[in-house]
Image 1 (cartoon, rainbow, N blue to C red):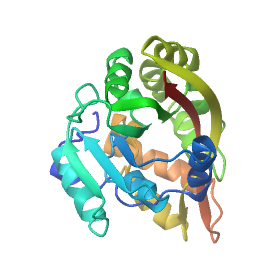
Image 2: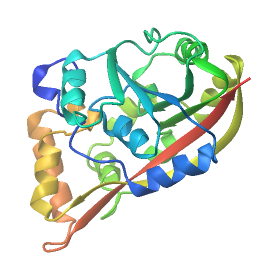
Image 3: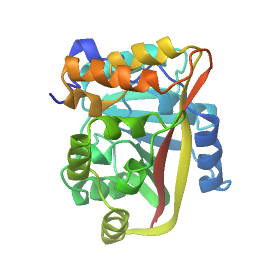
Amino acid sequence: MANHFHHERNKNSYTTRVADEQWTTLIKELLNGQLIQRAADIGCGGGIYSKALCNLGVPKVVGVDYSKPMLAAASENCRNYPQIQFIHGDANALNIASNKMDLVIERALIHHLSELKSCFTEVNRVLKKGGVLIIQDRTMEDIYKIGDEEHIRGWFFTCFPQLKEIENARRFASNEVRTTIEETGFKIVEERKLLETRRVYKTKEALEEDLRQRTGRSILYELSDSQLQLLVEYISRRLPMDKEIREKDYWTVWKAVKV
């Protein structure tokens, strides 16, 4: 079963974390002091990274998502951030005026798309000349990283190798991302790898419950409830009994500038 992003029961799936310090540091490095007055967070989910952009000092942030329940959860999650506006839209139709944004971020978005050109063309439309596009997603190189006490996700594919086939069908290779970015009016500036702390769990039981809820992990919706329980047990056997768990994920990040 695929993740039903429009279902009310899943609306808080992407509100339970905060942006990691490593992510914040990387974004600062990529922006390199560039003045950002307006930013768009495309595929904003629960608003975690919309909030993080405000915390970086961006005075106006627009969060866009195609799921109305998630936008409602994002509004609640960011209720103390009046500088964020959430609007309903699609990656190919953003409902944002042309040439308005200094920065567009697409984090964990492109693997949900069937192709990239329409999305990147739409980003080009809303960005000002010289505006920055930052894309963060996983390549298959990131997916294949071995599982361990920090890289919990790697164990998903050890336990259920068939999940790699599903990932392979929805992940874009770096050269395809770069080529399409350049074809849609951007100049590639940089490509970086990021090992980002996803969440810190005080107990193993807290991680197990997070996995059972499939919180923010769309790939786990490809497993039945019984398969998911097997995965939880598989992971639990490999983790220490009484130790804080710092879960980390591998990502690829691309920075491009509108020419």
